[in-house]
Length: 180
Image (cartoon, rainbow, N blue to C red; front, side):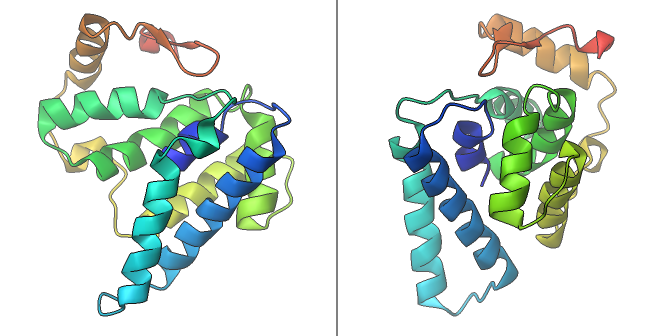
């Protein structure tokens, strides 16, 4: 889900094929999340095909991509051993809240075309994303995975070490998180 969002929740670009394909994948993943059956091979086949499509590069061709959630999530996985999917689910809604003014158009598009809600408030869409993750029993608080009180410092130190000091589709994600 987040892999698709990193290529979709960017900025308006007019590439209808990429947007519609990404929206179809997101709707399919939501349907799978709502109908999990560990004994259903078709369920797993659909999940694997959608995951393949999210990562094969097609939906990202010629459009802005973000990957900010991933950069932060990778550092959390490395520091605290939290699995990749959980770090992405923890970071994404919070990062979207920080960026919701610049991502408002795409969030509202996602609300309408993926979640089927019509709203003028990007927060409504972020809440739908959180509800999806919670429905999968993912705790969205870092404190559920670590009691480290220096998470911000540790993560920003590693981001800087790895050269990620200004990133995201507009390069507006920086290490000055204390000011946000």
